[in-house]
Image 1 (cartoon, rainbow, N blue to C red):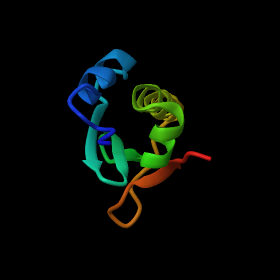
Image 2: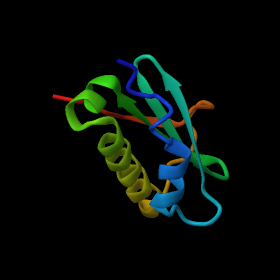
Image 3: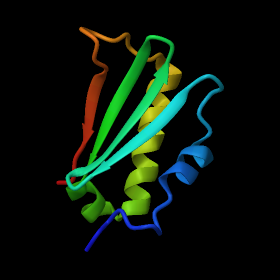
Length: 94
């Protein structure tokens, strides 16, 4: 079963999350999950949403929860890049 089929519209979920102006949120899909990235200037954070988390919570709710956590991080202040890379958090299933 492909959890990331066309029924899961991540760009639409990103829009619905309501990130602050000036923050760019992108995603990359892989067989192991989805990488969500929030960037603003030289700051940013990546959140890796694992396939296991999507199986546990359901793809739509898992993406919504991950985006909510990413938005909280944006509101708290994104960390600066270190050695050219963003900090990364992981959203796991149990």
